[in-house]
Length: 599
Image (cartoon, rainbow, N blue to C red; front, top):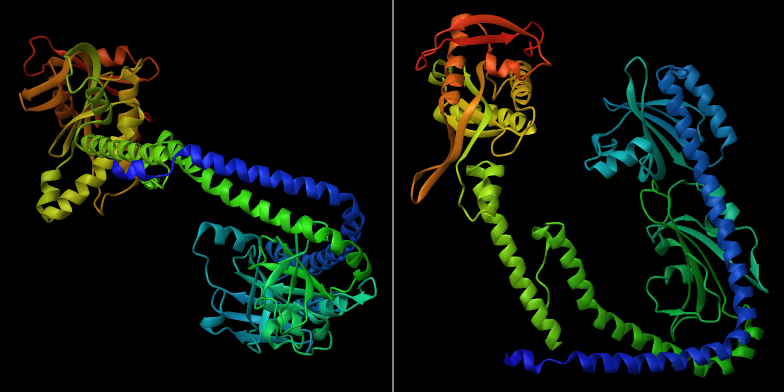
């Protein structure tokens, strides 16, 4: 409590935030005053830079789209059988034509699933058979996101099969009609792109230097690379461009005199030891690029110097005040709003019952929020404990019974109603279990019970007892099921079908099922401090006897007449009237007609 009293009150926080808003409004007024003077220069510079960036992005898209389109075309041709990946004469004609029309392609390769492959290079104009070193083979993607990108095509910097020189390569898997599969790999020749980037681009009297980077350090295109004969791509540190080499090492400063460009980051670099330089960079979103592509330009800040000098003296004071008030507003706004955002997010997780994803709220220094966070954390811990109890309870008691008991504070009143009982027993499981270890017996039973219980619960049935290798299930208690007789029949058919379709921990099983409909009592019975929810009555005994009669009549599913009358949607075969132990009146029994029992 003393700690809560020493924390800052929420009134003080709002007062500080209000002062920040006042300061921000002053900066806004200064900004409005300067806006007209700055607008023409800012828009002019921004539009020119945006135009240069847009042209470069278009060139990059066109350049790499052509490679991707050719790769997709090859995959389609292989898939339809129009081109055979093993016909080297045909492949050479196709590859020769492609490389003559697409100078951006340096190499086309096919890698088959066994590691063998074919490579055609622009430099040699010849096909070469290769055996990929396992280190250089295209690996199978692990995550779902990687598999999706892999199936639609994916860019990667990887070694050439012939020279082991690292190349920008677009990859996509193929599958032929006759079962041949592999990966098409098309490597890019980046020198032509550098030639395009080296063409003249000016801002005022100053030339712009354009470049393309992969993951901020690998240089894919730059004026220095237009004469490069090798297809190996250099990193930034190996270029002679001093400004680009210092891009990530020198301090960045934002430029307020250039209009904001959507998606483009404009700033200056340089310190007391180097000349300043203006950069404009844009990150290209290409889902299959295999990394982050950055298109950028840099130029001398003296471009547009006359306009900047004319405005600088006016803008300086207003800019300083604006930046100061803006920073203050951000800091105060974030700190003040963060606890409320956190509380809202956690409350949504509670609403969606995702308690395991909730991290405790930080109390902070605000007295009221600290108290609320502490109470909320205690509430979440209580909910987690209740969920753990419910989940653990549900493993030993059917979920619908557990929900009923929790709702009624553990008091379950007996119910006298009509329901359909299904009794299931595994055939000759004692003989099977004699050949197994105790652990194998448990694993086999759990595997079978998991499938059977899932099928029972799909029809809103409830398992009341596991009796060794047998299951007693009831339909219409405690959850009402209008067609409970047909639900029990559907379940029995599904279980017989499932047991034929698969084995359980390597063991084939068979089962017999008895189904009866009648009056029963459902409720909790047992000692005062240990209860079990079950059903009992003559209807239950008849279902058990029917299961046993399957041995006599060579059937898998036997049903009483009371169940048959409630299932008009099925065809049945009359077995006859048979005496049942414990009953004076014989029971009319049926089995499902042919082709309805899951066989």
